[in-house]
Image 1 (cartoon, rainbow, N blue to C red):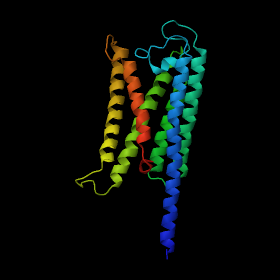
Image 2: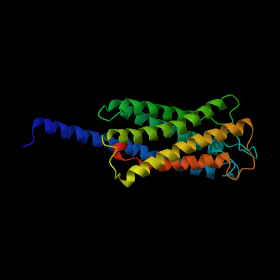
Image 3: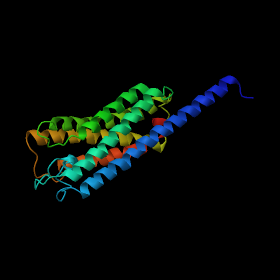
Image 4: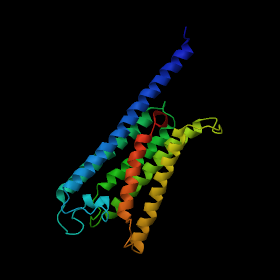
Length: 232
């Protein structure tokens, strides 16, 4: 017969699992939103989009990069898509704040607030005559905060394991570590390249800064699906 303590523990565990599934579902849903947003913005871009040489933010600019055409449709798509993303990340943050059963809920909630702010600022066109700086800040917050969130969620799961010195670790352990390292390395690399590009100018690169940006975003999308329930 299960005593009251065991029943209470089982109920709490069940509540944790349900909360984790809800949060993970919302996190997973951000991926198709990003893909659909960028895909449609690419299709309706006011000129032929140069994948290697143009930043993702060009899709949301007021005017196109080379031909200087009015870019209304693509800009509206980017604004709408990233507004939805901002709202979704805010919902994730709120869910963490109201679910104390989730481990480190306040820390993770605060990190997702930063991601939400970043995606909201990305909706400002990068070529806006007076507000473009806020777009740059938003893009930085978006990619860097996500990398921090991924790192924290993976790291906290590792630290919850009391015996990290056992000789035979599961393959998933090393795969998670690899993803975290790759995402963080790409974020740092793109940040350095971006600063160099804006200060001294980087031209003639085989892999341009905008292309590295897209590689970084792709790694972050993959990292989202690497998150296990225990990471949430």
